[in-house]
Image (cartoon, rainbow, N blue to C red; front, side, top):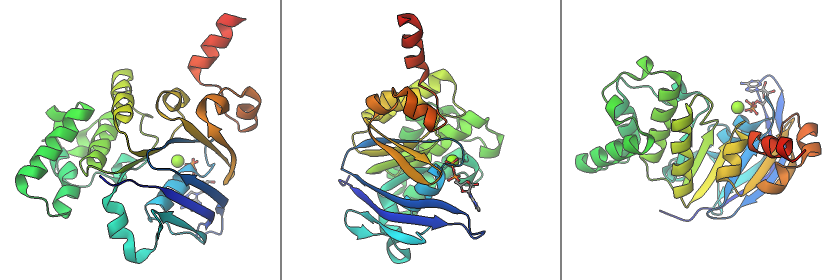
Length: 249
Ligand SMILES: Nc1ncnc2c1ncn2[C@@H]1O[C@H](COP(=O)(O)OP(=O)(O)O)[C@@H](O)[C@H]1O
Ligand SMILES: [Mg+2]
């Protein structure tokens, strides 16, 4: 695995209908940092994440991965290091079996058959769905699809994980397993989510987006406990914190 840092510089993005979804985003992620990207619906979280793997390219501004600017020419090299989980798992699962979907990335990078098999089984085990390997992805439940999508990302042995709302359909046990998996992964992580308790458990740093701009960037424990700030951003305190507040009244 490689050490990866990311620099986002004055990033703007306008969709084809002229809607400006990102308006001057700046941040730097050090190698190994874990960052939660939070913000209400439509804040720009998914748009930002899609820029980081070059599915969308900036209208203005630049993104650098270890000093390599993201552009059309180097996407293949950049994506090799990135495990990406889409908000909608159906964007990620497109073959006829879970096995083939998880094997797709490793096969694409021409790994030999045994290594592909090892990676697939290992990734499915890590998310707890090895018994579903022969099933057609479209027959899975919502949460199972999310887990299969996460397995496709980790099968690449990525140096960075970028996940868009990975826990939204998970049951409590699968969610806890994912949190443990994320905490075992020592490399750079970026997680967009409404699950603020997961952010507390997995990310030292939090960035809040609102209307395409960063309104806060700092330590998770400071940001997510700031009731005024959370209210301003149309968010609520994490449930675990709400519980503490209630008991301390
Ligand atoms: N394909 C698109 N065309 C036009 N506007 C879009 C498109 N996708 C998203 N948007 C708009 O961009 C804004 C940010 O969307 P998104 O990044 O999906 O937000 P989030 O992930 O934070 O909920 C929203 O107002 C949304 O309506
Ligand atoms: Mg989104």
